[in-house]
Length: 260
Image 1: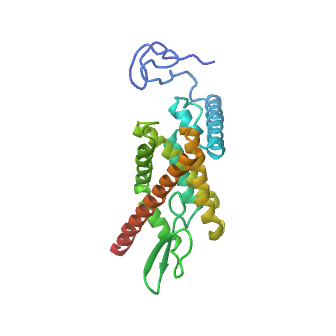
Image 2: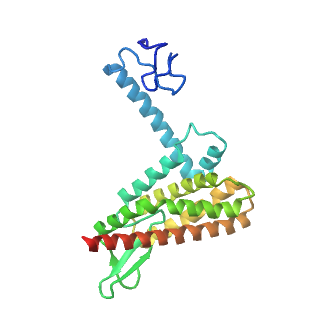
Image 3: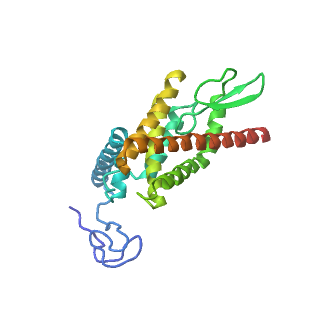
């Protein structure tokens, strides 16, 4: 194995002294002779890929079939085995944009427009009049929505804090649970987006509700009846906040298009 040629010398990143395998100040690995050799780079790549790949599948499996486990693990400080909540949330929302061209947000809202009345409608199912807006316009609205999507997280966390303040008094902890729930909702929307709308819409709505129900039950351990009522309140919060956020994004997108 190549020996570090900077052992006990200054760290290449922060300048701290006493570097052996890793810098005691910032954790930077010591520079080794042969670090840039192809064999060493191949070893590093395989190590990082298999480590990350295992973490990804472990996290996705837990997210999909064990609602609330990721939140409970994070709160307990067991975080090394899982993808961090913010990264998971960002990846899930990005996948939704890529795979579901006509839906926006975690619960699969669609935007409909009636040429006859010039009315805009936001919903999961088709209204009596109107057609889906173009993929280009959906992408434009989704691009604006990217900057506003965090409002849904904080609204969820705020309502969750009100409902469970005796169980968990830290707002940040509720933000973590919100990220995990929204990650699942985004992935569910992405997976079902290519199904016929009469099938995909109820799958997303009912699937998100049931997931949240089991998630709250696992994390907070309250009875099913009380958990159901709190789940209903949080579900209303999710749909209302998302509808308002997407509606505002539509207004911004329309004004931007008109300006051009």
